[in-house]
Structures are given as structure tokens and as C-alpha cells.
Image 1 (tube, rainbow, N blue to C red):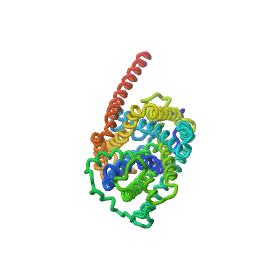
Image 2: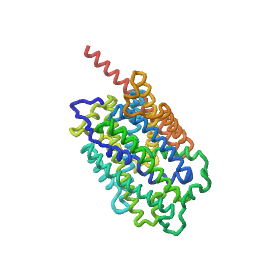
Image 3: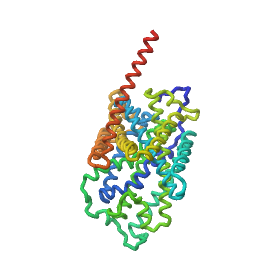
Image 4: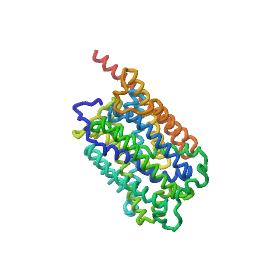
Length: 469
């Protein structure tokens, strides 16, 4: 990690529990709370379960690749640095901007959604006031210290984890008749899973929804970004990765199994959260208030993680000399204040476009962010493949790697192929196709910008050299 000693240094203050909750907090969000209903209505109950099982496999493959990379090279900025070293500098530059945009757009949309959540309880207070309050609170949490940010994210995530566990236990009890359903209907057991056939619409809908599933799992890669601020990364990162993957599979597959078993396919959708539907079926009092509170914490957690991730990406780009050096300055507490401030401004601009141009600019930005997550995962798998080959060719041994992804080269290759299939699936869904039309030109723009800025920088250095001579 290259740093100017006069600019301070990132402090390694994060512990295993912070990393695990940071990753879980980035993953357990509105994708799980809302999108699951859309996936059930599109693919059927069994199809949804299959889609999430494939998504869990993809996450496991990507995290194994990232685990080996981040333990060997614990850097702030993580995967964009690896892509620069083992794929190409232009690819690393593009990955960083894609990921920065992903979280910056998520930050803006999260602030809007948080405002709408608060209007449920305070309908007379304008949304923009809540947006401003949450904007200031999240910014303060991030600029104080990495430890304060991590503690805030720990408690945000803990609320969601407790809710998911309660949901799985109560929903499972209702599935098997231990808790009677409010309307008096008999326990469904697994009857809804085969409703209309195992795959009522065939295999294609599963392929079409894979980006939505992968996007629901996105956030696990935050462990890699936080590696540079983690105490004893070679010990902490492997534990965090294994723990996170195990809990994710338990939470997601358990949740989806309960949802698919209790909600008939024709009742699922995105108008109402499937969690609310289940709580209403069981007869849990204040179901709407409980879910509204949990979704609010999920949204604030996503915004908190989003500002952290986007700020570190700008810092890392500057540290790699592809952005002005001002973005690499750190405070005495080891916080990239300039990078965080610009990212916060980007989030506010995304928030502004969601109000002014929701059907044009904001839709395009959101489409790029969904595409970007899968593109970043592609880069992680490719970087790991190249890293392992380079390590062995240069005389290194497997014993020197504190964390090794199993079954190399199958792990990175299969992860890459499954992510690529998810991207291709976008072309078959008219509602998601815009992600390709916006995402691919944006990638081309990033590559073009890199080569243009690199060319101008080289020319400027030559002019300075000639002037000195």
C-alpha cells in the first residue's frame, strides 16, 4: 500500500465481528426484503430456491478468489488494485469507477428510500428533511473514525440479522403447523414449492433473474475493501470470509425457503414486501411497523457501507496516481476526508436525479450499478486466476499462501462463467436490458478515459523533463 507519510495512514482498527457484520450489512438489504417477491412471481417457488442456490454458489466462488487475494495482499481498494496488477491498469481503473458508481448511486437511492420510510410514521414531514438528517448522520459516522463506522454498521446489521433469524424460526413454525395461520388454513408444509410444476415458466426466467439474485448477494466483497484497515488480516480475513459465507447461505436459503413455502406464486410481487405478507399470515401484531423499521435500518446500513466503499475507491485511485493526489490525503485519524466528501456529493447528486429525472438519468445510473456488481465479480475471478499462475511461475509455493482457494483453476473459471451467464441473461429480460445498453458504453468510456488521461500525463511528464534539461 503506497502512502505518503505526511498524509497519515489507514489505521488497522477493524476486528472479525466488524468485518462479518460489514459484509452481512451490505448484503441483507432491500434486495432480499423486496426483490425476492418479484423472483418468486417470475420463476416460481422452486425456481426461486434454485436461483438463490446458484447465487450462493457464485458468492462462495467469488469470495474464495477474493479471500486468497486479500490475505496475500491486504490493501485498501482491494480488487481494483488486483485487477490493475494482474489484468491491466485500464481494467483496474474501470473496475474502480464501476464500483464507485455502484455505491454512490446506492447511497442516493438509500437516502430517498429512508425518507419514504420515515414518512410512514411522520407523513407531514417532507422527505427531503429526512434525507438531509440521514445524510449528515452517515457522513459524521464515516469521518470520525473507521472504528466508529464499523461499530455503527455492526449494530445496524445486528438488527437485520435478528429479524431474519426470527423470521426463519416463526415462518418455519407456521410452515409445519406449530404456529397456526391467522386465517385458519392448514399448514402448507412444502405444497407451494411444486405449485404449477417445479419450473412453471421453464429455465429461462432463472437465467433472467440471476443478476437480480447476484445483486441481492452483493456487498460480500466489502471484506476485501476493508482488508487494509483490519488488524492481523492474515488471521482475521479467512475467519470473516468463512463465517460470512456460512451465515449468508443459512439466512438467504432459509429465508427464501420460508417465503416460497408460505406465499403462493400468484400472491408474490413487489407491491408489498413478502416479509409483511408472511407476518400478516402468521398474525404478528404491528407487522407493518416492524418491517418498516427493519427496512429503514437495512437502508441506512446500505448507505453507511456505500459511503465507506465509494470513499475508499476514490482514495485508492488517487493512491495509484490515476486521480489528483488530494483524494489520497488522510486525516490524523486515518480517514480520506476529501474522497468521502466527493462521494457524499455524488450520492446527493444521485438523490437529486431520483427526484428530477427518475425515468431517464437515475434509471440509467441504477442500471449501470446493477451491471457493475457482476462486472466487478468477473474481475475478481480473473485477477485470482492470473495471481495464482503468476505466484507459481515466479517461484512461489502454495505453502506460502495463508489462504488458498480450493480446486484451482475450477473455482475462478466457474465463478467467471456463472457471472458471465448472468450478464447474458440481462439481454433476455426487456425490463433489465437497459443495464447492458448503459453498462457496456460506460465500460468503454472508462477505458477511453484511462488511456486519454494516461497519454496526457505522459506528455506532461515529458515536457517537464525537457524543461529541466
